Amino acid sequence: MKLIKNKTGLTLIELIISIAMIGIIFIVLITILTSGYVQILDMGKRTDAKTLAQETIEQITNNSTTISGTLVSESDLLNGAIGSVRYHIDSNKILTVVVRYGPSDKYVEIKTVAP
Image (cartoon, rainbow, N blue to C red; front, side, top):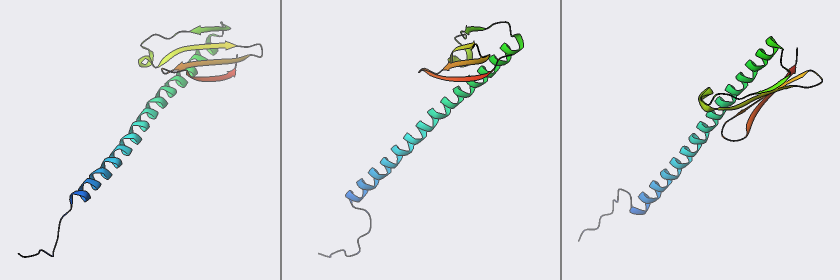
């Protein structure tokens, strides 16, 4: 019987280890991409909330007839991203606008001097 001295190819153990390493790298990449996508969506909602707060300040400044109140947004406003808009003018003439967004208790608060 002839012995083969020139061995080429991979053993089963080498193949299993390489597949496991590729799987681990793939899982890490998917996790990073998923968390990045969630953060991008959250920042988009935050930007929409800031824009709505600035628009509310402009409306209050232009009308300047109300002192405080609550604006409850429509259910389809900004794809349901905005929960409520509240504003208040305190005794020091500081206008505070708070916009709640997202499923949790996240909010944007902007303060300015009232007219």
